[in-house]
Image 1 (cartoon, rainbow, N blue to C red):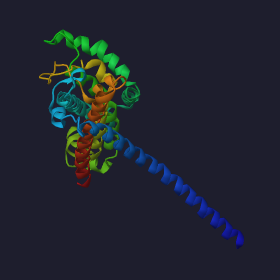
Image 2 (image 1 turned 45 degrees about the vertical axis):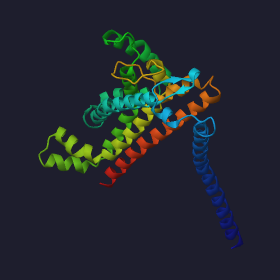
Image 3 (image 1 turned 180 degrees about the vertical axis):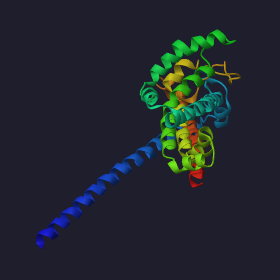
Length: 298
């Protein structure tokens, strides 16, 4: 009896220790996120307060970035980030979803063995290699057809980001499509629908929540990409993009290009750029997550 009681006590103590370890691990992630947010916002909002405060409106609405002249405007960077991300999503999501449909529903097993590993391999390629590919292949092609003298452009950024987000969208969309019960397909086919009609009228609507989740992660990858975009965007110091041939300077590349040598007001403004980027990402992700939850409830 005493031995059993001793064993139960040891088991309870061990379970409490394990639960404490799990709690510490969970809190470590939460605390890290909170620490990053507090640090970035503290550093980023500092230049807009005090006697030598910089106008927040000039910062958020400006279309010129010239630290040597104490001019800091990021509106044209916001526009570049939005256009590049939107372009990549508009092109990448349909291609990714249709590829996932082909792999999950139509492709023979031999083709799946080739296509699926190739797509997964794309996810493991470092972003700098995507940038090198864009600089060596995409940019020269665009330069040949562009009315501008340079090939670095919004179009080049959109093409490279589209390629970069495909693995995420294809993999998650395929998983969502395969998770749709076979009874959906059988019921649709039993009612006389063709295979294509079944896919687009029964399978994809049922997998919509998972596809939207894949889109959320694809948006996060596109917004946060830095190195590849920096190599092919052109990174002008001023001017709103007025066409797909225009050079752009997304928020991420602005931070990466100058943070290593910036100091004083310039460094603070780069942190302020990080605040804008953080808010932008949160707005996009929260919006898409709400849409995903609504579709999941349906």
